[in-house]
Length: 579
Image (tube, helix red, strand yellow):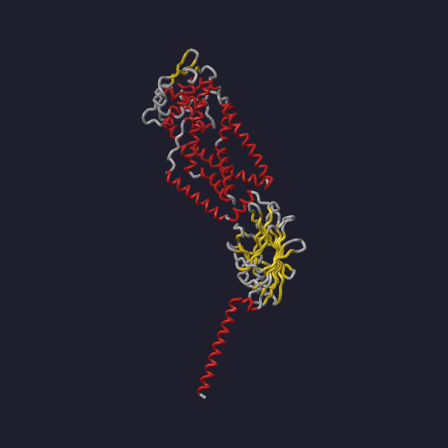
């Protein structure tokens, strides 16, 4: 009996072990197949009709029949779309859907669409309203742009039909792909399994319209999916133009470009800090002071230059019976620069003296003088060069000089193709250079022509010869831009580019000529004149270091009246009042 009892206990123990192993296997099977299968919830049929449009977008109609048991499918289904995916030929595409319609059992269904960085989730149903048990058929209609990958010799569609985020088992999936008219298929295939896998559990056939139909031959488990791939010759799907590709690239990588822009700005600010601070005082030459007051050089600048040359003993002012005569002196203006005198007081005098005595050592002031007009023209050219240098210095120190170049850099980085990015960057850089250089040259030269400055007509014609073809090309390019987009888009783009070029320049020019520091410098000169003693002699015979500013500031003495009238006659201008 004891032996029999021991034998029976051994058999019971073995049976218990076998039962435990069977239960463990069932538990693992339940975990493997997922809670949906344990609850009997499955997608009995997943059908997708993908229509490829000529603009590269797709219109998708999905019919999803789901068996509801109140476990995972409670209020509705949860359709997950990947935010990006990679085609079989290695091109990354972003998936941004626009939902057109959601139906349940043929009737409109409420849904919510949540976009994330990794996926977009479409959830159907209302919060708190549970579905009835049984089968429900959902119809999802949505569109997605730029889903065709354009390669060198062919176009490709790689479409994740079911996605890879389902928690339900899909009993069977089907995909029908409709290409544009007359687009012959070069290659067609499908892939099952996890994302990136190359499973072949499908068969392909063609419907009555010649469209390929892909049907799975086994269940699709959670984490797996069905993807299809087709290629066809180029020309049937229109490739987006450069501006459209740039827009999509900016939209898809917006934060990347913002970070790149912030990096460029930070590097620029660091460069500015390393260069040093802005000078504490803006010093203006007499010619720039005249330019600030009148917008161009007047007879006051010529009179101030004559006073400076006379003080430097580079010019003599002889009074004869027929009026004043300007005679060339023995010294250079630079030689007359005394200790402690500011070099800006003498700025441009060498150019003025060279032009004045280019064709003789004497210049009478009894009537219109070509020599004096030529000298004033050279002085104005030197003054505008000096103004340009000061403006560029302010732009660099105030970081505004980089504004248009940052726009160029961002547009170049936003291009999907490197060569297009280089092309647009070079084109816009050329436009900026023309905006800062040739356009200003054009208006300055024609302004001198209108003021009867000698030698200005040739410069104006040269500027016109360069600018007219550029403007014509810009108008033609603008016409093509309008054809692709609209007048509003063109005006916005042109306004943005023009604003980044023109506004910083105008601001810096105003700061140099009429800013607080320039106004303070002019006010200081006026105070210095108010306390100066002329010693009852004309200004050019005095030792007053700032006498060259007197005509521009309108603070002439009575002894300089005759010279002022002679200069006005020589330049064909009205005599300025004396103080």
